[in-house]
Structure formats: C-alpha cells, structure tokens
Length: 337
Image 1 (spheres, rainbow, N blue to C red):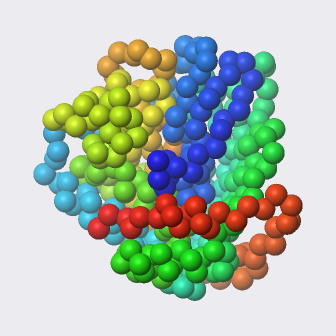
Image 2 (image 1 turned 90 degrees about the vertical axis):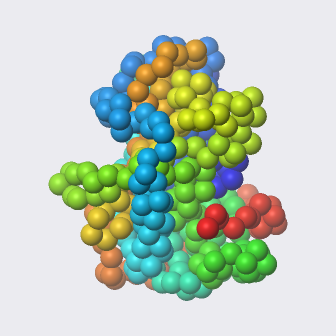
C-alpha cells in the first residue's frame, strides 16, 4: 500500500498473538487491520460504544452530492496546508481484536511551500482488562525541519526505528512528476497533511451533510473505497470491489476499514475528526451496520499564533539511523487531482 496504508508497523502482543497493522497516517497511528490468532469473540460495540444510523454508515448508491463532498475534502486539505502556523492536540482511540489503544498527540506546522515545517508526536497505550495481555505502549515522532524529514517509532518491546528522508530529493521528484505545488512537500512526507491526502487518494467521497460535533458546526463527509485501489491491495476481493455498489463491509477482513467519515469545520474548513468504519469481529461475520473501529480527534486548534522555531529542531542519535530517501522517492506518485 501507499501513504496511510503503507506506513505500517507490526503490532506485537501477548496471548492471543495478533498480527496487526498500526498505520502511521502521516504520523498518526490508528488501527487499520488486526488479525488475531486464535480469534477471541470481541464485544459487539464500536470504540465509541454506540451504533451509527444505517443511512450514515452503510452508503449505498452514489449520492448526488458526491461532487460537493469531494470539493469540501479538497478544500479542507488546502486549508490545512495554508494554515500558518497551525497547532492542535490529538486524541486517538483504536480497536485491535479485543484490545483498545488510546492516547494523546500533538501536531504543529509553520510556514508555507519550501519554508513549511511540521512536527507530530503520538503515544498510544493498550487499554485492556485482560491481565495476560499486559500493557504496551507505542510512540511515534515525525519532524520535518525543511532539510530532512525524520521518523522515530517505538512499538512496545521491539527495538525503536529511526529514519530520515532528504526533502530536497522529494521536491525534485515532485517536479519531475509535475505534481501540483511541488514545493509543498509536507503532504508527501508525513504529519497530518499526509494522513488526509492519503485518505483522499484511497477513498471516494460520496455523501456530504451538516452535523453538530461537540457544539461545532461541521460538514460530515462519508467515503468509500476506490474500487481499483482496494482490488490492488486485496486481489482476492477484486471482483467484489468492482461490482455495482461496491464491496460489503462484512466481506472485508477484520480490521480493514470499509469506509471513512471526516468531520470538517464549516467556518474554516479545518478537519476535526476522522473515523474509520468497519464491522468488527472474527470472520465470517453477519451483515451489520459499519461502525467506528478507529477515531482521531483534532481539537484545541489554533491558527496564526506563535510557534517556537525550536519545535522543528531534531538532533537524533546516529546509532540505528537509516536513510530511506531512495526508497521513499521511488515510491512517490502525485496525489490524484
């Protein structure tokens, strides 16, 4: 996978052993796939412990407001890119099998074009009542200082990983690809921008409606998989992905999102919440309403304040550092128009 679904880290647990995916979607770690072995029946509830109305979660025929939904999402991505400076706190909650991970984070960006910098910090902990699972934590740090984009990951007891990408090489590749605004490389590097651009790349937005989110007026945008993208990732389900109406939520493996829901402020077009929707539980599973299996809240947003330049300074230890510029540049593709 690419983007949000390519930045994968192994989820390592005790009994029952789980081989799962934690996605660092531009720096934000959320649950996308969990395959437990052996599976234990999970509780029939979302990470919010509530069900969503069928009309909002189940999609169906492509709605006439599809064009509006796409415009709002694109506008939100551009609004975030141009928010200078932008600071926000993050809340995350994700479910892997019977386990729930929660934790805070922070995102900061400053500048525009070649001068744009960003920093994303996240820490997740396993929230479980099963003593044999213990407690595990997952840390993620992504910093772009304008010259390099640094990534640090520590997944529970696994050795930490430290990587570096040369930003100049990325911009050169974007110019070669004739990507729009090649100087704005953050969307191809990490942080909150890459998360949202990757979601837009892999999903098609079909429904837009107004909604209240904790007292804030927002657009609530529904998205479903792009059929060809899903077919490429899960070739065994290619026929189901391409049929009229698309694949059904119960046909996907446990943890693979069937859809996404974005909450975007109506007054400023800034993103406030991202939800990944699926039917949780071991397969096979009966048809049901897709519900949130992972949630990311973006709150306490401030635009135009002061940001200390030291926020984007990062001096990592030399030990264990891997320069992944070549691999990253080779994998680059311009986001869809």
